[in-house]
Image (cartoon, rainbow, N blue to C red; front, top):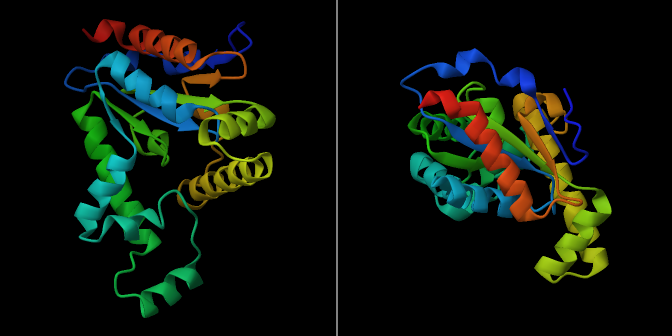
Length: 221
């Protein structure tokens, strides 16, 4: 169900009475299009709610769990990898972590964090791994050229470089979700809230998300 507001939609059906389960602590997942400002929204939302943000920290936790160096895990983070590529790397590189090992560890870490609650989990299919009823699942989007301009401005890149980066990250993240979860992250049915930063500022987007969180879990007190 779409909100009458042109810049965000709230999946009302997700706000069901089943969320009133006691013993479970709420959390937030944030999915984002490259260059949409989703990372900054997640960071500020975590601060607003008094939660801990997990982004790069997820890589550290997976590296610790798999007993591999952080740089090794980073090479696979939010990227698709085929069977033959996995096999070849495994034969040639003793430090290599397979996609199966990575995704298993990722899911275990994300689930553990969500059960702990009071966390904001950025990307990595967090909304597909965690509970629908106990989390607020947010997607941050913007038109392609707005995302290119945002990348140029905040990452000091040329237009050509920014276009390439936005396309690259969009492709990698979509293929990652498709490969490991069999989903299309652009489908708004997978989220409670979709924020379009074309006209919403980051602070406005955070305010909307914080209010949505409050409304979804207001009877959890």
